[in-house]
Image 1 (cartoon, rainbow, N blue to C red):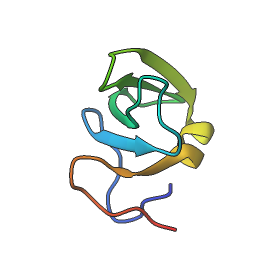
Image 2: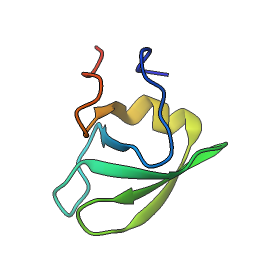
Image 3: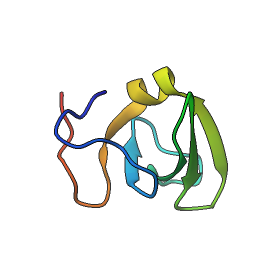
Image 4: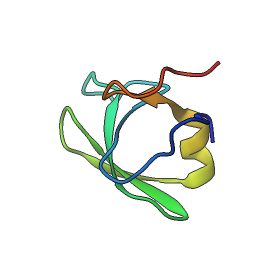
Length: 70
């Protein structure tokens, strides 16, 4: 996992590597498992990403959690 001090939980708001076409890069975690279900905070679109792809795209917490790790 990219962030070592804090684990991702359902309900967290996260920043991903690239912004969504609606213009925001903040996503709310809806479900964690083998795949991760995310809802865009800008337009409400729901996507599912395999866990491995999600971990590569994760940049940090958008809700004032831990800073991004390089």
